[in-house]
Length: 332
Image (tube, rainbow, N blue to C red; front, top):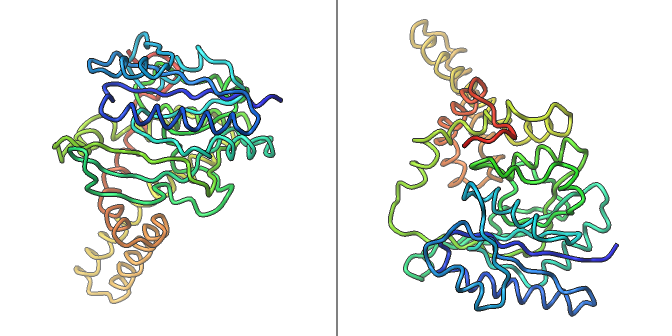
C-alpha cells in the first residue's frame, strides 16, 4: 500500500500560534518526502476565525477550508477527512508543533500492526503567557513503552489509518465535544486498538490569557461534568468498547464507593467506639490513596489533585448515566 499521508490542521483564532504550527507541518512533510514517499498533503480547516488565521495559512501556501455547521473540533476534523484522500491522516491542533520525524515513525509502526488503527506519541506541554513559557511538562501523556494501549484519552493530535476511520463511521461532526473518545469507542467496537509510541510527536502549547477559573468553568460548572457518563451510556455494546470504558473509568466507578465506606466507618466508629471500624476507615483511605498514586504513576502532586477533583468527576460520571446519552444524532 502506498504511503500517502494527509495532515489536517484545525483551528479557530489560533493566529498567535498557527504560523509555527503550519511551518512544523511543512517541515515534517518535507522530511517524510525525503524518505522516498509521496509528499503529504496539508490542509487547514478553520472554524470561522475572526483573527488572521486564514491569511496566515494562505501565505504559507496551505489549502484552507471552512467548516459548515458547528464550529467544533469533531466537525473540523470531519471536514478535513472530506477534502483529503491519503491512506493515513494526521490530525494536528492549531496550537501544536509537529515533530519532523513523527510521520515516518508512525506510518512504519502502523504498517507492521494490522489491528492498530492509529498511534500517538510523546507530547510535551508548555504554558505560554505573553509569549513567555511559564510552565512546562515533558511527555505529557506519560508514554511508558512502545505499543502502550490508549485507554485514558486520545487527544486531538493523532495519526490514523483512513480505512479504519471509514469503517468506524468517521468523526461525528454533530458532537460539540469529546469527539476523540466517542470515535475511540467505535474503533474499539470494530476490533481495533489505538496505541502510543515512545517517540516524540510534538509540543502542545497552551496560551493563558488570564482567566484562572477557566478550567473549573468548563468542566465543573457546565454540563461537561456529565459527559463521561453520557458517553458511557451511549457506547456500543462490545467487549472492545467496554474494555476501554472500564480501563478509563475504573476509578470513577470505585472512588465514591470507597469515600462512602470511609465516611460510614468513621461515623460508626465514633458512635460505637469499635476499634476495627477505625481500622477499616484507615485501610480504605490508604487503598484509595494508592489507587490515585497508581493512576498518576506515583506522582504525589498529580495524585493529590486527582484525589480532590475525582469527587466531582465520579459524581458527574454516575449522574451522566441517567442523562441523555451522547449519540450520533445532532445535538444542535
